Length: 441
Image 1: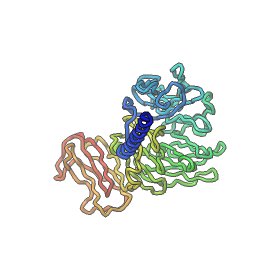
Image 2: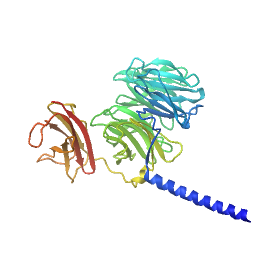
Image 3: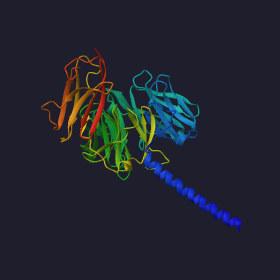
């Protein structure tokens, strides 16, 4: 009898503990939306991929760590990160596992004599060169096979392999800067090269030209896997995210989704697109996947400057991991934190030119909606003190359009300021952006 009472009490206590744990977990997820994963990876992460290759810990996650001291990286246990490279001063920009054959294909380099496509053997931990191809952009596996794209300006191309053993050149893209390739739900192939997005149909290609360099192609998950989006972001007024419209094996139009400066990669979170930028002052956004979709910045407090890649984390749902210039972050519960209310990006502040400068520099910005609120462009010094208001002018307006303002390095009293770092801040309605510039006298 005593034993039965003890067992009953034990079950009740366990049940209470379980309820408390679930409550704490729910509360914790509401409060803490971002976690930095793998603190020992405190450097740029250009690519992340999961594999089923034996001996790789942390769910088989592989990392491409570019630049000096970088390489193909993976954990053999929770505390042991292994980094493999072809040279100490060069790392990969893209990786993809070939799981059945226990190997990893790596695109190494960014403008060196060692740039190329390499095969890494897990058993021997050695690299084998497949071929030298300068300025690689990606290597990836689609349902139709493996692809490798490379090039800078007009020098580049696209390689294909059905199984990873024999690689051939797709001649149509010779001398093109091939930046990405993806397949939609029915297997239609889309390729980006420079400013052009191509659709493949039995060896022939149709295309449309975008205003800026295409940096990424993204196909949404099922049941929306007929939707194809591109990030067009070479660093101009025309930088934006578009949806590719197509029918009868032909690209028919591009639908403007939103304007973001230097969008670099696209992913998906719940019913939104996630767009990562390589602009120092605006990094990560949730975007409604519709024409003129509303936008919300979600990476404000992460202290990241550049976003390179995305991946799904296998434990929590919904979530995504993001590879940045300072490591890997896990985002969860992001839409509930904002109550699903997105705010429209109604202005854009661009980098000043030249920078550094002497004696003048040009600051450009654009307004995409009219404002009844004040719109101003102000110069500050390192102490946060206002140096000069550049906009509005006495006759300034808040109408839609692009403006360029010249700063001649003087303060409100038209006195020359000293050499040093200055900040310029644009405020337009809910939009606020600050950038840095250097005056050298």
